[in-house]
Image 1 (cartoon, rainbow, N blue to C red):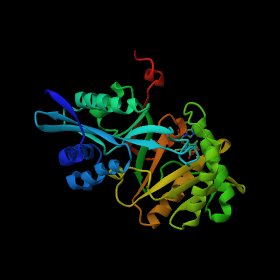
Image 2: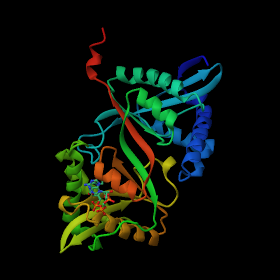
Image 3: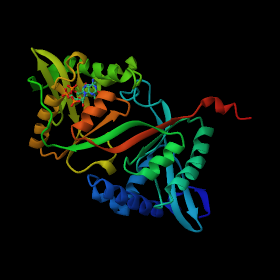
Image 4: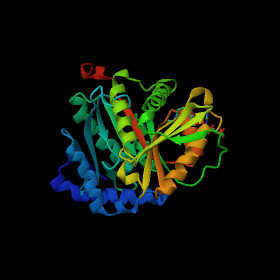
Length: 336
Ligand SMILES: CC(C)(COP(=O)(O)OP(=O)(O)OC[C@H]1O[C@@H](n2cnc3c(N)ncnc32)[C@H](O)[C@@H]1OP(=O)(O)O)[C@@H](O)C(=O)NCCC(=O)NCCS
């Protein structure tokens, strides 16, 4: 294959890109049947790709072999205000190659991704984007290997399970649904979760300046009865929480129908490994069943020892890896 790389032009490349993405999704779905079938249709993929064009400064590349489009990759700048409730989880200035923003002809992914990324990275590094993020299918070994070879490492995991009962023994704790009057309990447990993320080996910063936005987010969730904050109490003390909302943070291409999102899951340090997390998940799964949901989705930090083990051994299966690369910004002046 003799490949050329062109700048992505929606008028020329979008139709072919949608077909490549639909084919990628069909392969991903062959390995992970939880994924929704809707995206095996190019029209749905076309709309998913177009999402990138809403981000000012987006840029993409198309790989061509002769006249045929054999791959595409699109990057979208992500700029988080320092007080945004998600500011602790994302770099302030990054470029995201989101889950629907890349695909290549089957069997040629490794070389095509490497060539496309080289061209895309050049565009963004020149503009001062040194943090690069990509969303990939965990079962796609060729794409995973291509990003690993380009210095990307696993940062976060999105995972899904059904709403069936838990198998592990649950602690004998009381589990209550919180209301707006319990806001201070919710804030304290959310703070404990942030502190856990700031410790080894996760080391995600806990930016205190995000507290007001994080409190607003939780207060907003509490005010809407469609969400649920489940709190576990032991001898009257709050010892854990699972909070639920619509799956806004999951990539639509990875979300089966009737999925609810577990936004925050935390058990206080001294109460861990005693069945409290299982009691919460068990109560929450029963609630999700009653509400007509069929799946629960969530994210966890890839280096979160307890969280990764707990969720995966509770039946959550990874559906998206967030991978990241941080380029040494000294290269901006140290390249001559
Ligand atoms: C993840 C968490 C919610 C689980 O709640 P929990 O009450 O500890 O879990 P349970 O006691 O019901 O279940 C125990 C299971 O959790 C995992 N686990 C809990 N503590 C662990 C630890 N210290 N090390 C490794 N695994 C641990 C294991 O899978 C364990 O199963 P096992 O006993 O069969 O090995 C809780 O450990 C926690 O809050 N951790 C810190 C915050 C966090 O990671 N939250 C999730 C963010 S996505």
